[in-house]
Amino acid sequence: MTLLVNAIKTKYYKVAFHTRSVRHLNSVAVGDSKSEGDAPLVIGSSRALLQKLGTQVEVRPAFITEEEEGALLLELEAGLKKKRYEFDHWDDAIHGFRETERLTWSEGCQAILTRVRSVAFASGSSLLGPVHVLDLDKSGYIKPHIDSVKFCGSTISGLSLLSDSVMRLVKEDSQNEWLDLLLPRRSLYILRDQARYDFTHEILKDEVSTFNGHRVPRQRRISVICRSLPS
Ligand SMILES: O=C(O)CCC(=O)C(=O)O
Image (tube, rainbow, N blue to C red; front, side, top):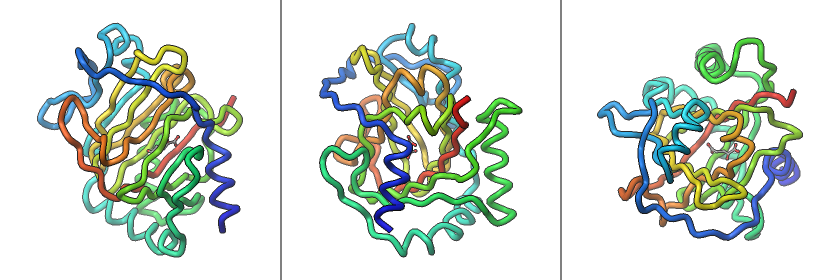
């Protein structure tokens, strides 16, 4: 069991071992990713950066309905419950998680994933067959990392179930360039190209989970992640 869990994690993630202080003063908001109330879902360190990465970072709120979220949870919970949350050594990429990969889905869930794939990936792209499912405990979080180029291509997209959360992107070689993405429960996020290769991404822990100065309480969160294959 542990071997499988470690194999999935090690396969996808390259942890970024850097310390940094991200300044969130003077952030700007731009782009098409807006909440239903028209509030921005992506903010960043400068308008130039947001414009540059505008098409490479998307958050689509309410991508799935409550019923669809329920269907995914029903299908995933039994398998996840058999595993223990792992609270790992400080240098691992994820803290307080359990995970699985799933290749076959019920018809209803498959239809949701087909919708995800049709909006997130260019038609004709080769996709990783198994979907990665990551269950973060309320106290769990994902440290800054860049997904391994060996196993993951130019696009990563994920559905967020059970909780709102904040994803932070920081330029690997220029730490004062950053974006924050508010990922509402049932939203879909998409990271492409430079946003995926040149920026670390992370999911903030509850204690520091804020977006644009507002607290975003983190509950247990399950993400359902689709990836393209390296070309
Ligand atoms: O849980 C998430 O949505 C983020 C997962 C992640 O960091 C990754 O797949 O590289």
